[in-house]
Amino acid sequence: MKNAAAFLVILASLGCLLPGCGVAPEPGSPRIFSYTLDAQTREILEQLDLHSKMPGGSPLGRNFIGLFVPENFLPYEPFVLGLATESSIPTVLYLDAPWVHRYASANWLYELDRTGVFDAKKLIPAVAKAFSVKTAGAAGKIIDELMAVPNSIKGNILFFRQDLLDKYKKSPPGNWDELKAICREILPREKSLKFGFLFHVQNFVNDFYPIYWGFGGKIHDVHGDMIFLQAEMLSKAEEALKEIVGMQGTMAPGPGALKNFEGSATLRQAFLRGEALFMINWNTRLHDLKMLLASPEWQNQAAIKSLSQVGVAPIPSQSGRPKKYSNIGSFGWGINRFAVVDYAVMENAKKFINLVNSDRFQVLRAESAGEIPALQSALAQVKDQEVLRVYTIFSSPDVILQPRPKSRKFNNILEKNLLDALYGRTTPSGAIQAAANELRQISTWD
Image 1 (cartoon, rainbow, N blue to C red):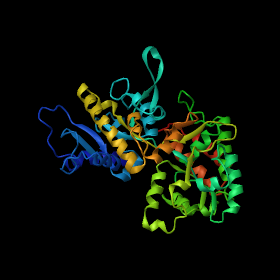
Image 2: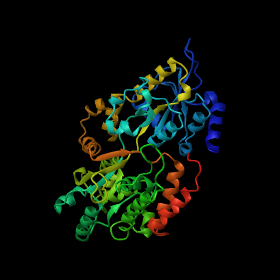
Image 3: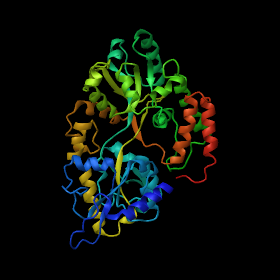
Image 4: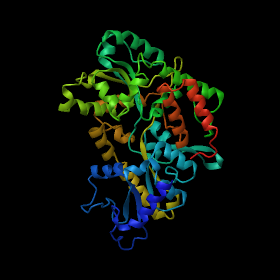
């Protein structure tokens, strides 16, 4: 929070030195409309070809100002202080799904659907649900209210060697027992394979959540109350972690080999070299694999020569559980509730959000980056078969998209203890119990 406070002081003191600042408001305009201008936002506006020729210019007119957010400040969520102190800067924020739930639970975000800013029915239902929170509607009825608008569907899925499963007449695994059985049969016969299954070492918790959910685990109940510390939920967490740790050294990298997968691109590179049969990764990595295959540097070292050799499927669940899960990694546009002081602000926010979530942009991102549009109308225009292939996972009635828990403290504590188990410093049971003991000491969640 100290870093966040320092950042907002910098914002105030720099004034017109910020990108988008230094231009006088249009005549007669009552107020300035601001939005967070991080690298992702800048890329969106640049791809829409809507920046003015002036450095830092806004596509929406001189009253719309982008407030620059340095990438190294993003882990501290610098705009949170502005919301907490009822600041009108910035008006619109680009938020990760769990941030949406955290800020909405603090009553910092403005409802988008019922106020007419954005019609939730325009979105793919699964992603609309992930960006909605339960609020009191008419007559006190609890409803799901859209709090941010995502422009893509991003979630983690299972990648596999389609060519090898075809060779041995295997179907994609629906549960972990099936995945292990496939590994036991194929690994000894394919000498190029070093691993049956790869997972992320950095931010392992993102991979762990859909595994845990697939064992019937939950962090919160339907009312949003924490239930992870209940004995049943802790038992399911132990089961899920034992499943992964139990594969280490035979099918998955053991503690000593994990250092080889601590880099950001190491999983997909190892997969492309033909070293792994299965891996968990974001759905957008299918496009990244395609880009690597087109790179001269990879054409000689890649064992995979075509995306036809790569299959995609939901992350397996526990045997006997049909529902599969994905940890949604999309960002969406939300509105600072305290900034909505009159009708003009809401109309400007509506104008901005509909611009950055346009069909044009989402179809462009599908074609150029392999992203799945969140808008139903944009998805209907997509021709890219790889995008449509991945979308069949998220559109399955058996697949549920969920954001990770909204508390940073919770995620950080669980991640730390999970890694202790993966690196062999403790047992899965010891790791979950240690996490539970630490979590019980937390009096206030962020």
